[in-house]
Length: 316
Image (cartoon, rainbow, N blue to C red; front, side, top):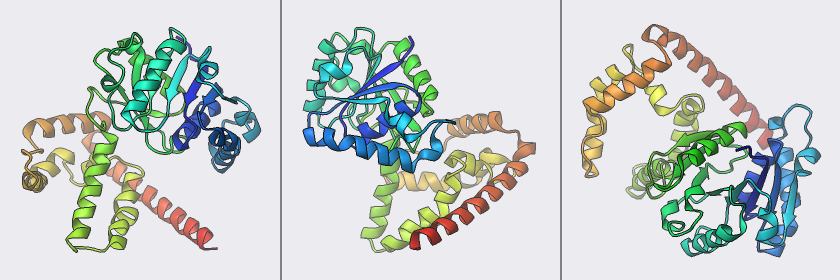
């Protein structure tokens, strides 16, 4: 199918941000929100956000052109009429999800993909009994999606395969970076990874091991500089001459000890090492590893300079 018109239910932070993603891609966007005040403030909120992120606009596009593709509607029926893709971005309450998807089952076009931006509830929790269930899918972003492109795509067991594939392609066409979650799990993967780090941060803080300020420094002046260019597995691959396999063979016991402390089985196993080695070597051969290290180093230097510049500007 060809997606040309998008409808969004919910004009909060996430709904407004998704509207920018779609309008920036040249699509017509219709937004509904039940709150009159939210509808009234939406045009200015979107215009301000587009202006701040104008470096991401396509060549020749202006703030006015992008915002001109967005219309605001007082009813859900008006917003979804003719839409090829409907994106629900309402409050994170299961009863609200149940109610609005029951409405969409009746109101949306029969071929429309029905996406939810929920960060907690798999589609099976609120759409399993609907006739439209095979067109329902989770499309969950990092916040805000018009700035952070990674987007989780998670089908339910009953979601049609072609709906999943089309949603993935659609996100790519809109400039997002979709990642496929292979099966439903509460909170999906992005939030679970983030939560694991945040929980450990709180544990260290509550046990008075380190101050809140120094915890933030570990990320902003450490991991964050590296992770801006490399995923964690890619970064580990550069920490040993033999790549990630050699590193984990030497130091994997550290991660297993921490996992065991939390009541988990070993996480670094021969199977996981083999899978990660295959992943890493398909991306880059061992004999090119030092070139990538040099690229990483130059990239971090450039980012540190940018951080210094931004810090000076912000203080000014």
